[in-house]
Image (cartoon, rainbow, N blue to C red; front, side):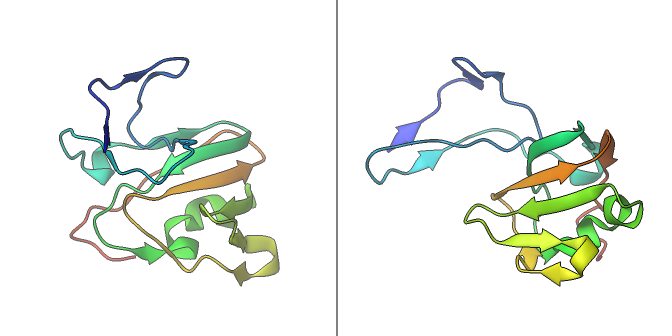
Length: 125
């Protein structure tokens, strides 16, 4: 089992709330990241034009098209991908991802800087 003792990784700097990270390993491992839960409504995710990697901060799954509706409705979202390469393509009305899940990362390609505002856990999309 691999445990991260600090929230600082070499070459990355401090781990940021709401950002997604990739770990390359040679053998199957378990990774435990400990910390205090951060409320989704208190942690907007700031996106830069181009590719971004984000984490899903809510406790319950929600359909990606609903979660990213604000970005999609302004035609800013080009594509979203999950960890295995499934895609959500709003311009084509194609959702190959389905729901976003806690603990998983997602890659988003957008045209211009934007912000994701998650709903609180006690509200549904």
